[in-house]
Length: 134
Ligand code: ZN
Image (cartoon, rainbow, N blue to C red):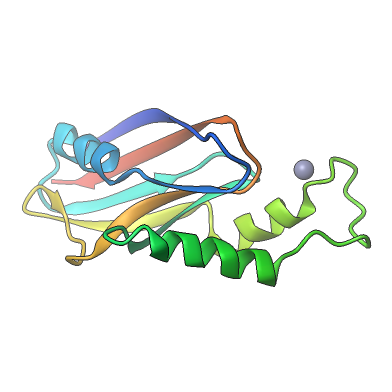
């Protein structure tokens, strides 16, 4: 059994981490898959997706701060669009996740959430969820 679901995410800042856990949980529940995997994919080059703590909003804030320190804007960047720091952050994090589906639900830790990570907003972005299994 396999199912594909897609939804939009609207970022409102240049750099923003948005909890998309409920949207991904919904996609998995509607897929009908009880045991398998879910692939979450962001089809963009300046946005990504990760799993981290979603209980304390200071955690995504601190992660954003750390990423800004790791990949600041640099005068040496040659990409004409001027958003190379955002491209670097996207590759550091990853455009996709593979998650375990067990008992019809995502197998995540108590404090884990699925976070869409915008690096060059504000924009309307797409997220795809492919759920596979039985
Ligand atoms: Zn670019």
